[in-house]
Amino acid sequence: MASEIHMPRLGWTMEEGTFGEWLKQDGEAVRTGDLLFTVEGDKATQEIEAFDSGILRILPDGPQPGDSVRVGTVLGYVLQPGEVAPFENQPAQTPVAALDQPRPVSLATRGSSQVTPPSSIVHRPSSTPISPRARRVARELGVDWTQLQGSGATGRIIERDIRAAAQEGVTLRVRATPIAQRMAQEAGIDLAELARQQGIDKVERTHVEAAIAARTAPSVLPTAEGAKEDRETLPVTRIRRLIAQRMAESAHTTAPVTLTTEADATGLVALREQLKSAFAPRNLPAPAYNDLFVKICGHALQEHPLLNATWHEDEIRIARAIHIGVAVDTAEGLLVPVLRDVQAKSLRQITTESSALIEKAQARQLSPDELQGGTFTITNLGAYGIDAFTPIINLPQCAILGVGRIVKKPAVVGEQVMPRHRVALSLTFDHRVVDGAPAARFLQLISQFVETPALWLVL
Image (cartoon, rainbow, N blue to C red; front, side, top):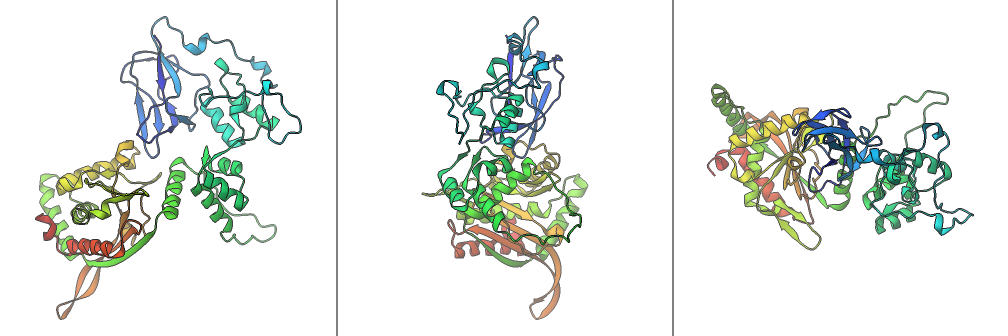
């Protein structure tokens, strides 16, 4: 019996993924465990294996590289000897010669003076078969594909149906939350155009707020008359769009407050140099400063568990386990892999796991589970010469620590002025969850751990 190949769910929250590419050819023999195709999740690319052996048959109107595909969508089949792919048993599609004249589609247009008889309107359930490419084109052109009769196999809606409908004027019925609808109406924003521009299927409040903010932002001064505009346009990648949505959501839904302080890091620098000298003969990776701060924050969060909490309208949930995310700069954008159960791990374990996660992040090989479930985040801009800054909370967490550069400065020690290593620390917290005083005490404890490493080394 033919085995279906589906778009897999790479994480509990994944509803759709971006199809990457087929790693095998249509009609090629495959074995169980062979890599069939790649999928881009929110921030990770995965290679998907075959679960059966046989002959690979790829849907002729299946997704193209870069198409968004819902979880569970059939992409192809693995056939046994003598079997025929289901799509090959379907009636032939419209001849190629007729493609220049798209077949009429039954539709109902908004605002049309001519009322379409109810019998010609095709009301589709949510399970209407539509190719991923057609879905993407429909979103780009603002076409409501749920009103269309497809011309593909088994009535599947394909790209030419969408383009034909666009010429007939089928408009998009945008899904939007009630508050997004109200805000858009008050601001005079076209929800269909907003959905098309942002490449989304459902408009939420944060999307409308971002559109309002963009509208009210100061405009760039016009160039001199006749002068050629000098600019470069970059496409918004899936990761960039995801980062933008999450950052905007954080900025608009939390009550962020940032506290800054400066700690004497001389002892921490000395500790790291000692560890480097001790680990080198054993061929072990020396802890990076981020690893030291992960360990420090793990101990500090045990004493201040409210900073390890999340806000849920009617309740505040405090996590027992401490899972710390560490921001990693990659060529594709910001990724935050998560180190789990930090409170139960040694510094060596943290260093080993952190190094592996960073390598996977740079290679875009992180699994969705390695990017989820964090309860606290650390972001370090010290390598770029930055001191204090205002990190943005990584929802649904309630706090994030920003680490600045470690630099030598003159400092008063006793009655003498001496060169000391100093580090700037910035803690952004959600004031809905934590008040200023407990947040300050948490940051104060981190400073103490930085200045006196023995306090946490013996814990």
